[in-house]
Image (cartoon, rainbow, N blue to C red):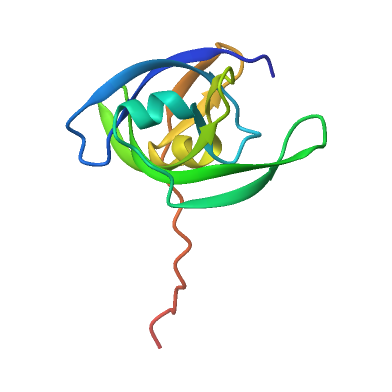
Amino acid sequence: MGTFRVTIEVGDPAGSSYREVSALVDTGASYSQIPDSILRDIGVVPDSRRTFRVADGREVERGVGETRVRLNGSSRMTVVVFGAEGSEAVLGAVTLEGLGLAVDPLNRRLIPVPGLLMVAYSPPQ
């Protein structure tokens, strides 16, 4: 699948201040990544640190927090990774699923999809 970018809005956890960011859509990335300086500018701070494996096989440690992401009129809290300076913003799988979106690889766009619920069913006896 080819890659493409979308403009998202990243906001503080309260949803009172947002900033537009051009993000690479990457369903291979678990979480969305936003450069550290952008997140801190809008008042988001990391609440933990995690180790991640990057494309070249190295492992890196990054700050992780939660904040709001808004796209196409829908806003959700999501896990976000504090990217190193110079890194690009990435829209990852957890955020896409939270917003109810999937990738249309032919048209290089995001499309709404229904969520999946796996509920145990007991037929009446």
